[in-house]
Each structure stands twice: as structure tokens, then as C-alpha cells.
Image 1: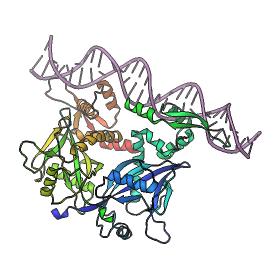
Image 2: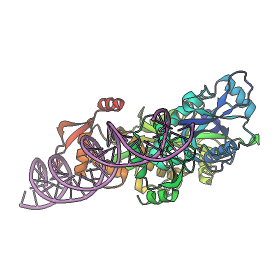
Image 3: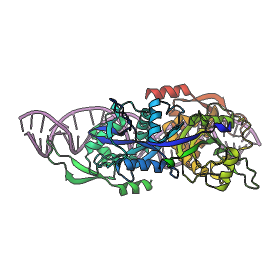
Image 4: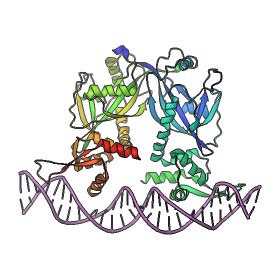
Length: 238
Length: 238
DNA sequence: TCAAAAGTGTTCGATATACACCCATGC
DNA sequence: GCATGGGTGTATATCGAACACTTTTGA
């Protein structure tokens, strides 16, 4: 009986959201195996180190992936099905990428948010990274498709609890239209634009700038910015 | 570098909430060490087995603890600080209770809900279990105090997402007053009773019964029940 | 008749929803 | 001048918050 307690490896996997051209995208990486044909993409992740907390491991993965030191991230669930790493291809890849005989692998999944205009400098480790629209995801190894699926409901509840995080997905300067499209993408439904303007006007921490779009073939939109200090002051006052 | 990937043990720990006499309580168990004086209580938990998912492990722990097969439960966070099991007493206890040389222990924390009037039949394993009011918790081993603290905010967001789960903390038949006190305990603030009556009246899935309290030295309160079917129908229709 | 808890309505402000037209700009 | 997207206001319904007195029952 006591022998049945499992000695296991633990990994973190990150669902990195980005927003571009009205679409939510997820950042995927290519596995190291040379599989002809199929692209073989997966969520970025890593086994955790000896003296490393899972949160630290997630930050490390994201840094190696993007060159960004402190991304906004949130742990959302541990995936631990005994069968999640039973596919022969996946086992072979674990052998190669980490060490042989990884008999069981449990993963802790994270959500992370990334501004589109952030230049990504991925450190050596990842040969190829790719933004992939959430509604056109490929078949992925392990339970990564399941993880992404759950992350989509998780990101909504995250925003309910902390409305400020949506601005992590937009450039410093953004238009109402961009924000509007982002909300529509996250909630996957249409939102009346007039009511949306009112809603934004009521957010004291979203400030209009003097600057407007240039060289657009229609009326130029005003830029806005998110004022973190105003937001925090408001939040602590409640 | 590759040697640095950790081979670790994984446990589950359960924060079991109960509600009695206007108070939220948590079910704790006594550790097996004979420490004089101090009671040495901890959260119920266990290492996970070889072929066991963490959700299954949590269900097993709860069954062994209460005799209840399917408790309402929810995974809420993985605690994995490298130092969380570094206390000498805790390490000694791990040696005894499980096996020697558990160098690192990661835990996945669960919330569970238990009706007060449920008779608890704890299976052999636990010598002594104790309901403990959330505002009078003892010092506990590992990071169990931290886990409980986070569970208190977690239970609120759980209820926001799924209002039906509060009824898991009440008897089949309950009075508005009981429900009212439960909400006050969970949100830790006073709630106007007239508005509360209105709110309950608007819940189409909370049905008044003919039955009333007996032998009370004041006006007898009406009993209500939660209608799961009506709730699910309502939920799917939205 | 008193103590103790049950039960009951109205008003107000804030918030969400529905809905359609004019404005600025580049081509 | 036209195509494209930007920007605006009003009316209505819904929801939450504040607030005090009467009813029932046993002791």
C-alpha cells in the first residue's frame, strides 16, 4: 500500500493569450521531434526544478519564451490524469527532451497575457513559436487541447474579478474600438457600441489622450490609456 | 541541469466547510504524533496513488473522512513552495505516516462542502476529527493556515459562479433565517433581512414548504427546500 | 404581557439594455 | 461624393440599498 504513493514529475504549462486583428490568439511552440508533415505544436511548458515553486517555473518558462520578466499570469488548475502522458509519441518526446522513464507527469496550468506590440525575444530553447487563433487550434500533445479549452472560461472569470487585466492585452495607447473588439472576442458575443462607450466613460481609470490615429481613411479615433494608479486607488477604496 | 528536474511527491489537502450555529467551520484531523499539550490538528489530506488523478484522491480522502461518497468539491490551487515541508516536526511526521526521505512535497488544495446534519462516519484512518470555527483556527503544520486563508476568498467566488452550492451547507429543509446567517458568515458582513427575503423569493428554485418549525418559543419559521431540477433548468436556459 | 424571532413594502439611485443617426477622413 | 469606421443620447427595465413595524408563539 505505501509503495503505491507515487513519485512523480511535475510540470507547468502556460496558455499565453494575445489579441490581434480582432482575434484572441494563443502562443504555441514547436516540439523538438522531427515529425514530417504535421506541425506538432504544443503549449510552452517545462518540468519544475528542485528548488523551484510552480509560480517561479511558470515565470521562467514565460521569460524563456518571450524575454519578458514579469508577465501577468495566474495559476488555474492542476491536470493529473494518470493517462495524460500515455501516448507513445508523447512518451518518446519526454524521453528526449527531459529524461527517460518519466512514468507519470502532472502539470499545473497557467494563464498569461501578452501585449501584441511586445517584441518577443525567445531564448535559444524554442526553435519556433507561433500565434494561433483560439478557434483554429491544431491537435496538440498531452491534454493541451483540454487545457486551452478550460483556459477560455477561466479568462472570463479572471476579468470579472479583475477588470484591469484586459489592458495587458492591448498596447499602451489603444482606441475604444480595439477595447471593444477585445471584449467581444473574450465573451464571444456582440456588444452594443454606444453602451460600450458609456461603460468606458464610466471607468475613471481609462483616460482619453490628445493623440488620435493618423493616416486612416476614415475619421481618426482617439487614443486612450489605462491609468494603473487610478485603478489601484479606486480598488483599495472599495 | 537535467538532473535538476525534481521527482516529487504530490498530495491533496481538503478544506471541508460546514455551517452550524451561525458559524462557518472547517473539519480538521489530528496528526498521529503524540505531542503533549498542543492538539496538533491539520487539514485532512493524503499523498496520491500511482494510478490516481488528484480529483480522485480528494474524493478518497473525503470518503475516508466522512463516509460520504460524492461530496461537492472543487480544486482551487496547487501549493508548491520548496520550503513548505521543511519544518522538522513535519518532516518527521511524513517519515512516519508515509515513507522516509520525502524530499519535496507539493499539494493540490480542494474546497469541499458538508451539510451539518450529515452523520460523519470516518473510516479507521482518522482517530480524531474536529469541526473548528474559521475564526478560531489553531496553528497548523505545513502551509495549512495559508491554504485555509485562501479557501475563504475562494468559496465566495465559487458561490458567485454557482449560487446553488450554498445549499450543500444547509439541511434539506431550512429556514430563511438559516440561509441568511449562512450568507452573512460567508461574506462576513450583515445583510438586510427584508432585502434578503425579496432575494430568496426571486429564486425560483427555492421552494416554500407547508411545514414549519415546532416547539420554538417564538413565531415558527417556514421551511424551504432547494429544487435542483428547477435550478438546472434555469441555468441551462441562460 | 413580555421576550424573541418571523415576516412584510416602498422609495431611490445606479446600472444594464435597446435603439439610429451624423461626423471626419482619404480616396 | 462616397465608403469607412468614429462617435454620440434617450428612454426603459432591472437590480441593489436603505429603512421600521406588526405577527406569532411559548414562557
